[in-house]
Image (cartoon, rainbow, N blue to C red; front, side, top):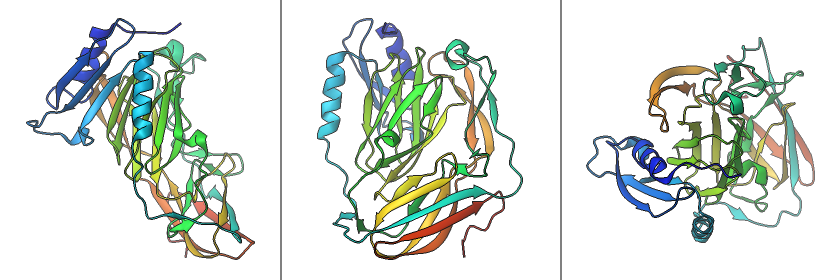
Length: 334
């Protein structure tokens, strides 16, 4: 059964609370009933600080079926962003395979107390949640490392996995943890949880979206390449993920054993990069839960790390590249 919040109550929270009343002015609350509605806010031009709303507006969306279809159609018609990458036929491409492994003592997992909606967020009564910032397997393989080619401007057609551009909020965690979205394409978002969530994005795109109904898909086109941090400012401070908006398809995310494959690579010499999100807590601050208006803890993480190597791809051949990473490893790869 759909889970809903009264329109007027949610309108006040979504439109007045997402970025703060000093930064937003309410544009409109379109008519709705107790199960549906949509509000649109834009940055107040007279605001002193608009840094949290660089995208210009935030949207609170809580779903009438017709509205969903209209929004999806509008997003689908948006023109894709232009990039410098050209798709060509790769008749003699090679393959790059390899691993990313941890070297040295393993850091302790980062754990955070589950303090809200425990029936949904913590059905196993674990009390804490691993922040998933560093996943090291039994064989030392590092999962969730993004491996990509840094200097390629032509090659195969786009084939990034659809699962890497579809976000689900399940048991108050983001699935998957790392996203790869082609520049100009949409990130699809939904929630399987019968609790209030609010996706808050900062970085290459600034965006807020409130979810009050389960299994309702919303989409946002990501036009600018770069890194987007994702957190929930609806009281679930442990929820975090990273979105990479990319210019070409030669990206891969390592599996639980630290393995990756880049296929159908045009012959040539490349710089290959291993990128990993920061795995330490760099700081904390108090922020407002946009739904309850109470204080919540907001986490800041350390900066991402990168390691670089050179690789030569021969026609119809395979190349092996392995990375070893640690808290104090050499990032040059030379």
